[in-house]
Image (cartoon, rainbow, N blue to C red; front, side, top):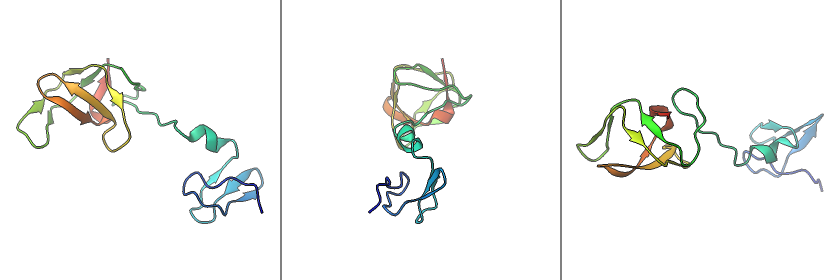
Length: 112
């Protein structure tokens, strides 16, 4: 049996070597043997202008955003303090004064 690691993309155990790369025959993903460990947990969230965001940052909303399920609007220029980065289609969990806890997409905020 082979001592090759499973595919980091689909988890298939049928990986094989092709020169310096490992290849998955099921999803056609190719990677270098040391690359798989470096990619895990390295999700980078960037704001609308490309600045890297981190937990605890303060961001500013760049566009009026309607709050789903209510008539409230988060106005452009609203500062949001102490954000938390999460996985999902909304990258940021936060609390906004006057509205409460909500999720934001990183494409609608800028750092600072």
